[in-house]
Length: 137
Image (tube, rainbow, N blue to C red):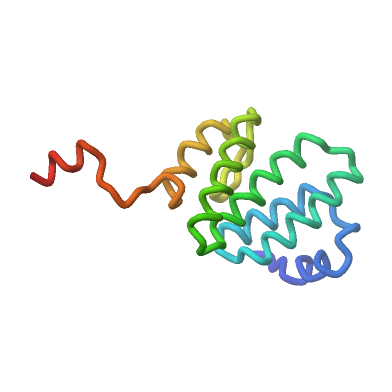
């Protein structure tokens, strides 16, 4: 398999030589690995490229991914809930978006919203659901 580490390091130094889509994909890979700081950095570089490329729709999708990365990187539940609402709002305005799992295929934004909520603290509560209480009894 081809090692892209040197390319990613070059992207950090001189991002303007890489297309926004490539930087965005590398950011998704970093997000998937849990490297939230790296993902955020790559997303910012990709956003800059998308703006220069006048790529409005990819920029909107990127901002949703960036918000998701920020939610996953924080420990403050109060701030997390505000960002969760922002992620939901952004995803609700999109039709399609790259999945959060490799190979990062385009998916319906509403399906990503549903799976993302279930996989984060945004969709969880400490109280069991009514059905859960009946099962426990």
